[in-house]
Length: 146
Image (cartoon, rainbow, N blue to C red; front, top):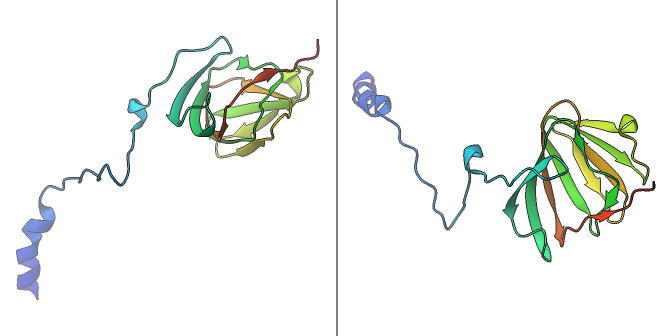
């Protein structure tokens, strides 16, 4: 038995090479390969992962909010499902913009934005990254009361 183990030892100690997955089975991007768009006037960046949020059909995007930026009250035509990947995301509801009344959702939290529900959101003290999935088109309609 010991002799067999000694014969296997060189095989176990040799270099391990990771196999490339079959591209017909799966695709992946490492964090440094995710293409982020430019920073918008709202202070966020977007990376489209799957689909096209401007067209009908399923989409998945990541949104990175920069600290100190929030959207103004708005709504989306369709439900959206959001997971906070990093940072803290701050949310408020209703047509009156009041960042002081927002609720903090930490990394790991999950939120559903129901279609036509007026809300506003963003990051306060730290960058925040979200994963948003939904059915397009993912329109955003301003709804702020002045």
